[in-house]
Image 1 (cartoon, rainbow, N blue to C red):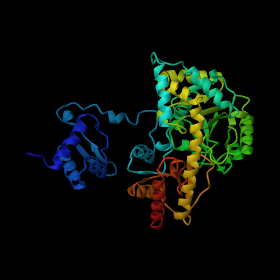
Image 2 (image 1 turned 135 degrees about the horizontal axis):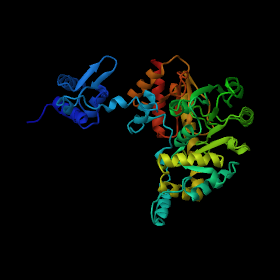
Image 3 (image 1 turned 180 degrees about the horizontal axis):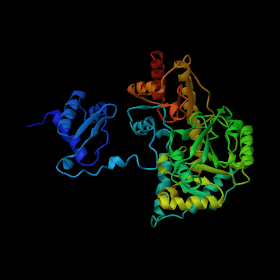
Image 4 (image 1 turned 90 degrees about the horizontal axis):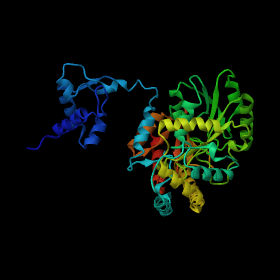
Length: 470
């Protein structure tokens, strides 16, 4: 005899609880999420939950949702069961914002129009050229052992050669290969900063959506910025010479605003940081994605004192799945970070490093970049046209000169959370501005790098329709 649907759902929920996927003390998904997960209507979910509450497996609390109270094994025991969920808040590293966690999960949903994703479209992946490189690399392998602490020497040499075109002189011993730019920031935070350090960041900033520095007990101090970049005087006014501090900046095609720091501003900022002895973390992962003209040279190019730690990556120009990035800095600092990386993961993927080295030194690299820049120009201009058509009366924006992003400001008062949820209901995933700065409630970060042409047009049209009703 076939079980009723609510009984089937009860069994599925019970299996997740007894299997340890949903532990005692943890909150189960909402009724709407469960209905979608088990492909039933909400009334079926409600019936199943009420039965499980009667059995003692679940309990509901106002404002906390439905919580796992027991599992079938703990119900048969007299002793209190071990509760891993109680340890969730004990770790040193803070959890992501709720919205950021949702975005991370929803970016994998192919049915959504991805208007916030910081990634190149799969259509721009150079499949044939990349397959040839992978085949060539694999044919020369005898084993896949660990690399040197600083990473594959051939890759570091190739990166040094590439950096010369940006005006950066570096030797392989001053380069550390990391698993993406994010790991570089993690290593810097645990290896070079201490509790109570002040990290200056532009407002808004990508790093404000993360908890890397705060988890280490560091303080974030936001400095005002304009279309030329962070305002040096704003940082000088905040700076306390008694406190250890560092500046984190994305000077070229900034995330989320898309601005490019002017050459004059770069000079002023470098001079201020030298005078005040403030080290700089320069995040240049978007630097090669210029559209209209080459941007000014990186801050690192004018660094004569070893004051700048330069971070680069292949995640934005090729593929995030390679997990290949690099940090360039003084040898003593790179030695320290390399030791920490060995303690953390004993080195980035050997295969990825060999592939990255072959990719960067081949002519395919420059050919690919030229194609990407051309495509980004088409995508940017098409997005700007759609914005002018559907949002010109309710929003304003600057024209980006490269990268993926348009920092879109809505003119009528809106609630970021309300717009985010309403857009999601309409099948559109956006990045609300308040994840980059709590004050940026009138903004969203719009990306033209990932979604298909027709999706960008449709998504912006739908946003325009929504704003008329908010």
